[in-house]
Length: 409
Image 1: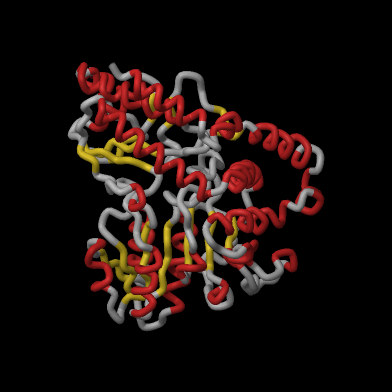
Image 2: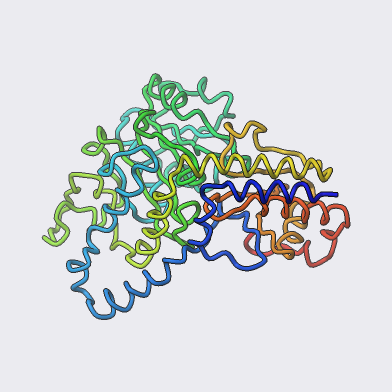
């Protein structure tokens, strides 16, 4: 009855210009991986690169590799490779620390750049770490947190707002902000803007320079396939490089770290965002993923993501699955994901994982599927739809083991 879906999928896969890139990743047999928006698959080249760094550069080169392998410049070099994928210039991006730490740095820098203003404006339901970092600065007396629904954000931009902090693609729904419009509105109100690209960098076209963005952060372990806990990245527009002063004044952000001065002097460029010693092993893995995404191209990835997500919706409709879609119906208005609401979303997610269809759950009732087009096929969409329909029709999700909450969801 449903063979036409699989037949159409095979035709689409045969004509997919990105199909060959699947072989550049390790995708476990029998797994349909719809969680690349939480942790990207492992590129096949990463283990060999990691072994080279561990055995040769660390094992044999030892401390000499800071010079001979150029470890010292990896944060700048890898940041420079990320830059064109987010619409920035190489000297405006650095790979360092975590998304949370980079948020803290740039929120604090923005507040100092807007004396007399203390409010950081965001929306309720933004990713928790973004809101928690504002709250942390608020407890230190440096900031005031204000939240407004996204349809009211423009009106909430008053003379006390120093910074507008938004996530480009919402982590739960995938709804995408008009980056240019929101940046323009903030600037007209005298505020700066910090964009969290964690669910769009490497997946959606982003033009930080064209939009006039001030700051941005993003993570390396999702669409950039840098591995669990991969280093993040941070962007500072060129016009702010001299005035943005981050509060975590560690020695690698110093103008001359190996002068060992008692007094801090920030580096003149984007490397002032560094803090402690760069995580070389994590950066080595991240660079492999970034190179691969750069080779494929974000525009091509985005086009395939839209096609995959729409095909999954078609397959679900043909199987009579009527879940409540909370992502925008228009693929141009959402990130590389589809999110559905169901009271038993957690149990359904676990039942699918047991079948090898790995998505994820977001509290309290969101079943989320992410699309990493570099290694996903249209046939995966047809099969995922089949599994979801069977789980719902059979009531398989009602089994006790699927209701028991794990620590990570």
